Length: 377
Image (cartoon, rainbow, N blue to C red; front, side):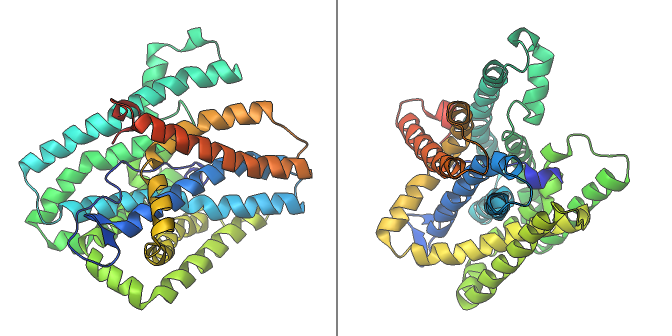
């Protein structure tokens, strides 16, 4: 399944910035645990990319391949978590106050802080990747090809997520308007998302196919809708987490283990079908979000850890955009035989080096006047 192997990105600056009047787990008008969750999710994104090559380069059946595969697949919760986070924050933030002026402001901010950075980074990777990897001559990058890459996020392996999230932003004001007019729709959000996503998958695999399916928001409609439902009922959801934290944690471990095991055994020819993988993939994202939120709510009580993770989450958008180019350079100049101890240390070191550099560069750019042009706000 394409969605399970492609890697997602963080959402924009709204994630974790919903205003709030509660006390527990919230700070300075922000839902603190969501800010911390963003840090874990962007760390998982970099882990996936840092270990992706190792999962296929290491010898089949070797202990090193098993290690890389376990780490890589266990980190795949990052894809749906960022979408779920967007749903939570957007619906939470605008559930009480919504109007035409709010909708206009919403679109203006997304155009300025999401679409413009995406345009620039898409253009950058359209030229960087062919030049660095010498895949096609730069003269072959015609306006039609650049436009196609922009529309579907194909100039780099990670940009498809921007296309998905922009689609969700495009329909969100319509959804919020309908929910304000017909409140019962809010209660049915997960079911509506499930029907839409199931229909898209059915058409994709049993119908006429779904072109560019991995870049279509409808293939994540259920996760976004669950996030929206949580956002509309966040205080109740937080109380449930506090009362049943062990359930959330156990569910995350159980579903994550099942999803990872499915990928491990598939390397030995044992297949369960795309349906099983699709269900586990999306359930893992939802379960992992709940389990990690339990952890984040505990960590938010420790100021040092909370500040550290918050500083990462605050620039997750930048880390997402920056890290692939750094990883490309790192892999090109530091190599070792797959399966060797040196290869293991280069893979581990690659994650820490790339993550730290991406974090530092993003913080530097964000501090510059006009830094929003590249990294949003």
